[in-house]
View 1 (cartoon, helix red, strand yellow):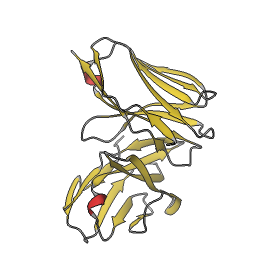
View 2: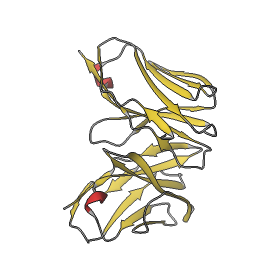
View 3: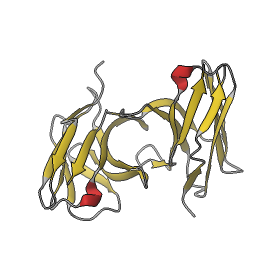
View 4: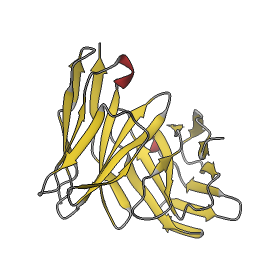
Length: 110
Length: 111
């Protein structure tokens, strides 16, 4: 069974730009969560989607948004990028409480 | 006080050693406990998943949960250089709530 895929793997953007990251969950999984990983803060929860509905949201500003499509694929968007948004963005596909992570998208904001 | 505390290490051990990794937590509502392994520039890989208190064994890995002490452990027997990675503990209140992670412990197993 194929794992979680994330695209792109690497991104370089400049301050003020916006970015969209994509996640395809494991086949049959309807829940997708997004996390931000930085050296200083570790892994922090962004939001979770289940059947196209946001079920949980972390403590991030409104510049961070997401959505889920009917095929369970998910996207997250970050608008007006700041230097502090540089991080590894991880998507997790989950079922019955077990969360399986993709390889992540490494975003660098210059 | 952070919800989940984990010693960041680094921890360096010789090949074949028994490794003990630990996390403490403050929220007594946590019921699900996980250990992830993350290699450099990769996503976290789920190693162990346990519910409530008790032990779970999978090959060289044993996870222990002591809810009365709010303390979880991961033991690695006969450690190998390929075990060198960052180990993250994670926990959640239910199967439908977000994971809360420790900062991770960096482990090096020296051949």
